[in-house]
Length: 428
Image (cartoon, rainbow, N blue to C red; front, side):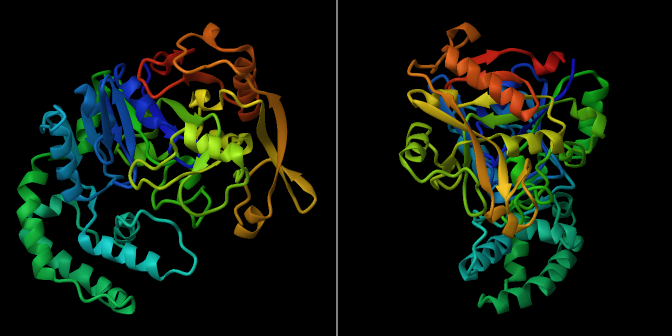
């Protein structure tokens, strides 16, 4: 049995929540390995809808769930999420949830800095304002407060002093008052017992799981095109979102990643600013947004919508070593007479098949489209390949050819069971 790593292969919001929930039935352990509570996964189980940001999707299935060291953790948000999901009947205990003791914390001063920067910027990045970026800055600057620091008051005091030495001039430059170190210490000491109840060496827990032969599902957040190194920089998130981060962000070696499953929407969306070669501003774009209910799980912001970009997904397949994709929201294309797929770009009179790194080049890209017939029949709720219209099958097969990876799962509605399985990643 292989482990499985699930990542978004576009700009996020591809429907990972449903697929991770579906795959959790086949896994023993679910691990979040990057990002913060800017990620949003929506799970629909029967008549219940669960909206998760920090908690791994496995908690809904009662599976051992791990928040890895690669995740930036807002401890107050984590506790509020635990409380909220408890109100829906899912009780989170330390036997169910493991929080890496070497994960870095998102603090109120990170949120202040994030929001002040975005408000002051003439060219906005489009962050969620939740402090994730500044928290990762402190992590790589070696001044972050980590989960384990909550049990050592002496270390905590020293770390807060070091942190404020960096943040005080930043805040002054943005017109913010100095952060109150004593108040921060009191807040952290008050929350420490509740957070430390879940804290463990996550790498050690996962090493034991791996040696016992149990199956691990690594759950990515955001999408590969928002990767801080490989995405549309600077309009990216602040962590690595490609599959390779599953190893570094969990503490397991790279051989543990197993089958890499890329989640791909049957069209393209993104939230926030940044390049989007196939973005639509016409009635088709409105159709995709309305029928697809394209609003961010975390922020509620309307998503930008466009045609499927095979060149971008092909790039994600290469960057993450994607072995197969799960194609979601095929039903949103129902009723469109003609469909378009971007196969590459024109840039300064030449053809290219990838997204260049430079902002100027990205802005100048002209998508090259291939047209296909749409279908009038409904695909919503289809659970077998033969239930799909011939034109829909043709569309899926063409997507496979253009991205260089097979479609192993096909999702036809938000419902968990409306999924067509061509190949089980855990059996690979």
